Length: 179
Image (tube, rainbow, N blue to C red; front, side):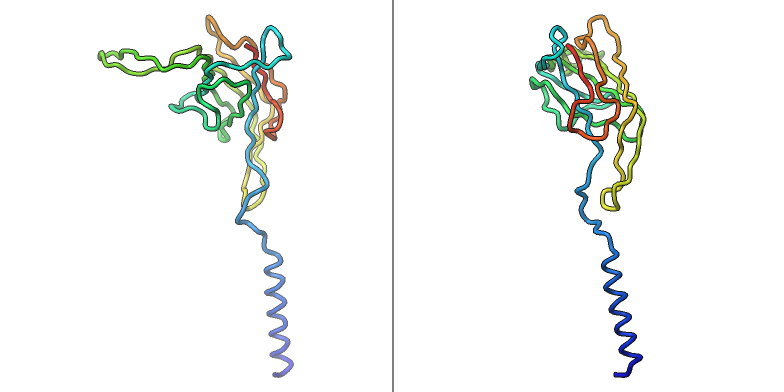
């Protein structure tokens, strides 16, 4: 082999090696997801004590199903819920003592409706999209978190406190609800 062919082979080998070293692994995302918002329920009469909500159910406003990942109709003192990543507000129906009740529609047909103590709570926020990697893409963090409890004649939720207005992880509580 002459020197030109050896040089070309060596150059090709070096380009191939450096080409593979420059590639980013992009088939697995382990670096992160959009955080869930952690809500803890407290006793309104003893604000430092957690208090379970009996037969709790949570449904997103405009949705027909319960929020995934939250045990349905269970007695719980904490939940982690997702916010919408394409809007600056997410609403939920917080239902205490949830039961299914038979009712009659306008045509006289029996239908099943939600029974229990239902309060409507909206969360407002600014979205901050953050690029993680090619495999993960973007995640959304939430900033300037605020809330709006729809007033009713007898809300079971007595007070809502935003503990952490910046939501960038799902480790600690962001919201306290007193009942």
